[in-house]
Amino acid sequence: MKLLVVGNAHLVKDNQGRYYSASVYNYHFFQRYLAVFDSVRFVGKTQHVDTADGTRYARVDGPGVEIFEIPWYQGMKAMVKAAPSLIRRFRCVDDGCDCSIFRIAQVESFVAYLVRRNRKAPYAVEVVNDPATFINMPAWMRSFSVRMVKKMCLKANGASYVTRDYLQSKYPCRHSLGDKDAFESSYSSVDLDPNDIGISKVWDATGTLSMVHVANALNDDSKGLSTFLRAAALVRQRGFSVKAISIGDGTMSDDYKAMSKSLGLDDCVEFLGRLSGKEQMFNALRSCDILVIPTRMEGLPRTIIESMAMGLPCLSTPVAGIPELLDKDYMFDPDDANGFANKICELIENPQELAAMSKSNIETARRYTSDILDERRKVFYSELRACAEGKGL
Image 1 (spheres, rainbow, N blue to C red):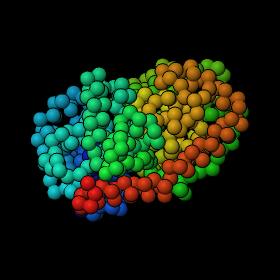
Image 2: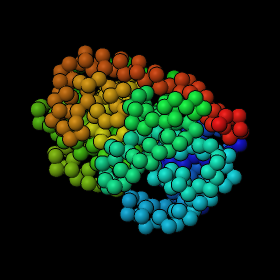
Image 3: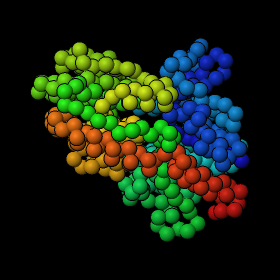
Image 4: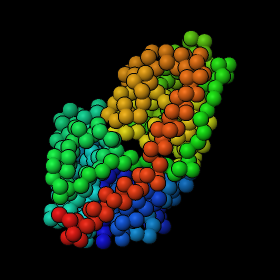
């Protein structure tokens, strides 16, 4: 039984034919699907290189995982230019597959859904973000994405969401509308082992507060790194000792470094670049005091859940499913650098509140450990397999 999985992945292929990714899509990620299906075909934009930097990339392919290459591109203009070749390639994307999972809202999933050959094969959707929050996307494309997500949810055999309620209310599926033959679930994409959960932290008011921002790709300001840097500068101006740490890399990395210099943060900001693997990320988070992520577009951020698991207090924005994780006192407008700075200063002066946040966040993170989520995923994927075997819809 072969499953097609389509998302938004940038892969590199070395001269030995091995595939690597700098994102969540490593070989371990696909074990969640291989627990139910015999094999997985995964679609990825692929760039050919001589060698892949093992410190930046993790291996993607392996037993049971087949890579379906599509032309490499980055950005909207490049996507439009590559559209003819993409459509031709996608026309055979589901050949030999028994069913599909489309991770949405991703352009690649939309194209694969629209041009797939076997329209009788069952499919499910994993709704991992809200396209209505895609501020870096032209309005017409954002509107199209919202309509596509609604359509795909309503027609899918099954739908799973990373949120408990938010995405379900905006993009209802057949099951939620009363179709008993359809199925529904909710689980985050986070990979969090119960043993990963840390212990709560304690602080005093005399040390330097280490504030961290995480973004997989720094190709725009959708994760609010500019607000993070401005907030750090404001906290320093008010006489507090802080260290600002940025994790992530992309086309705007140099712009952010220049911005930090213009804000006078040279001696207290550190750009770590992209970290490879869960352990590197978790070790970096454990060394910090607080996560500050003024994000503008989300589903349910893995970064916040992972930081909670490390015992970090978290400040963010009331975007998409984030209010399911954070209290309203810890959320601010994505551009409100002053609001973030005020709260950081307040917390520095109230270490007992930081400790209470740390303890509460660890308990929240326990709801997202793999022993809980893996069982939900397995049930969901088993229902899709039953449909493909003719035992369901």
